[in-house]
Length: 447
Image 1 (cartoon, one colour):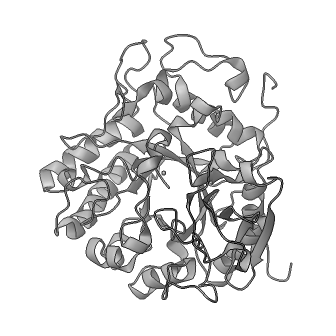
Image 2 (cartoon, helix red, strand yellow):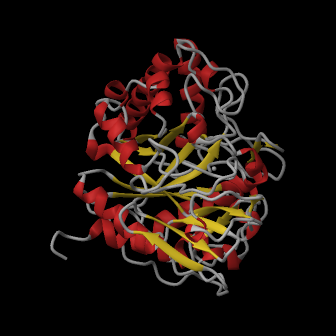
Image 3 (cartoon, helix red, strand yellow):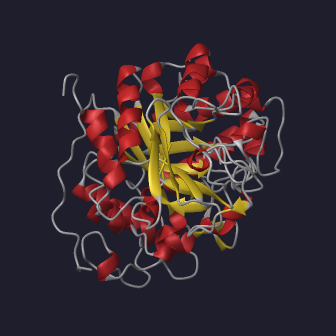
């Protein structure tokens, strides 16, 4: 579920169909301690550009305690233009430069309690991310390019050597060198965002099988590898100039068909620092039957067999040559739900009359909304590693701290690279899910 809030209704493209992967006080107080040693497992959280319109400011990553526990924040998303470039614009459905770097933050919205002024060179989320990094020097912030909605023109951008070079150059100029256009409002200018981003997260969904209806080509598979090569080469060349390693990551699918059609696993990890794996949207309300959306292993009695699971996704990539220690497991901070569900098997694997009413959209709810929902009973499948809520008619499947503990134990046992979440704004005000993941990833054997 990796898409703009205003476009969530079109996320009903499931992995089961072969096409899933969808997207107080004036100050925040003293910075929380950092725990980002060089050998620490990755803990990656997506921050959504549009979250600010529902009060989910960058400051909340600090006040929830999330910032001190994360190794990476991925900023979702940058768009790819029809001519194959990274760009900034204020246009519905195309870009939101206002949220990115123009919108002045009030003192109550600011990480350090200092209000922005109108037209300052860098405002918006980018300025707040810079402030967050100042409080947490070990935290890396990556610009995530694409997502479910904005992968439409990836195939064109990756098509030729010339188009790849132009695409990567535009992304580095805009987000690494920080040369932002001065649009309405006065913010922007040469180098104003330099230092905000530490690299890129490539979220092309998916090579050779574009989910949003854009162009797909059989040669996307080879061109994806070539595009990563180009990012790596240009990032390394600029990094040599400024004495910094810029990171390159990617979001990768659960469906083996999408893996085989669109990716060359042994080759792409030569360029990637690590990759995050789709660990959610295995089922949802595009189906009428209730089921898990993010189980660690296949549940007993699952009517879909074989089914998509976290363990199966990891195995699929490892079998194709991906290095275990560079695979970071995706986990959802949101749930998927059905209503009109008969009171059989606590609602699991039952028919429904449709999506349950949700705060995000029908069929989708944040964990922070459901955690204390009256009238519901929580059920856990300890063996399969997933949970759900049921009140006799409405069913929500989600990950809670107990499930996060199971998944982080799996990550450590399997020698994987860490955990990623979509998305940080759906956690509770005290960062309960982020804390559970942190505790699980940093736990030592025998604890």
